[in-house]
Image 1 (cartoon, rainbow, N blue to C red):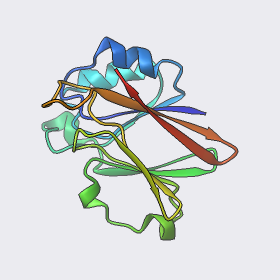
Image 2: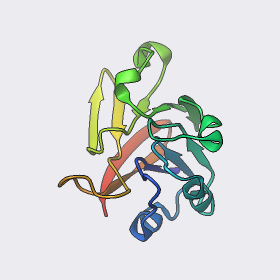
Image 3: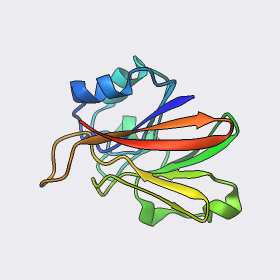
Image 4: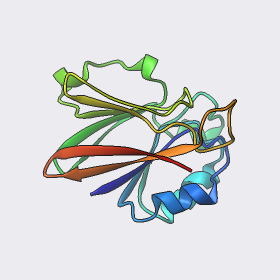
Length: 150
């Protein structure tokens, strides 16, 4: 299974991000969507699971959860916007991956068998940070991740 991962669009869905997410069977948006139309555009590619970020305001945003546990093909993924608000112990909870956004800095590390992935920001460029998304592959209950600079 191929999962597209995006965050911090801040109301801008770049054509390069749409191209990078093509072929995804699921898209995870780690918050700071900025505009509900972004989620509609992503749903044209694949089903979307999204969480609310700190800039997401209004009725549409209040319908988004602050975090979501996503289970696909025997893998549990915990999705939230700000990693500093992680309220569980991923290994104890049986979570294989934690996906967050907020910092705009793409990052990927494994700690105690858990993948921590921040796809970076796919929206307006901030400072000199790259514009990025990520992809997750789930094969035989194992995860592989890659960051893609747009």
